[in-house]
Length: 186
Image (cartoon, rainbow, N blue to C red):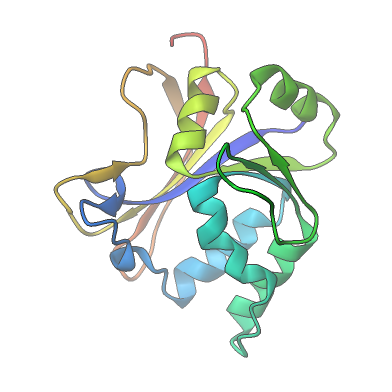
């Protein structure tokens, strides 16, 4: 059975973007980027909401000479992608399908049959997966910045007991926290 993993780069106060929608403070340096790439290697499928897909689809054609960027682009291209959107007309990347509605039962079945772990990207889609008790693991990269508001990484109204599996501090002040989710207390 595959795990569903939610990864987010957040401010210390828990936002993936500030009130103006900016997330320029979250760009990973080389050390963090290499670690993210290594974490993503276990994923065979990504689940994205529309906004996250639109941000991430640049990796489909990324031709950056930087080895870390090339590495991530290869990981992106090799993975299957499911985009959940009621407003997108179509998807423009390979190995990608469009779904109009997030169906927890379909995702449960995917977890049961997938040969590799599944990543969920974007806080709104992750919130649906968290509410449905589908997320097995949280991987949070806490950036050393407080933005004071914006798009929260985690939803209100969800209670999860977490077990700390790993932590790592990076030279730029980012801290990675990896938790197992217990879905018994929502």
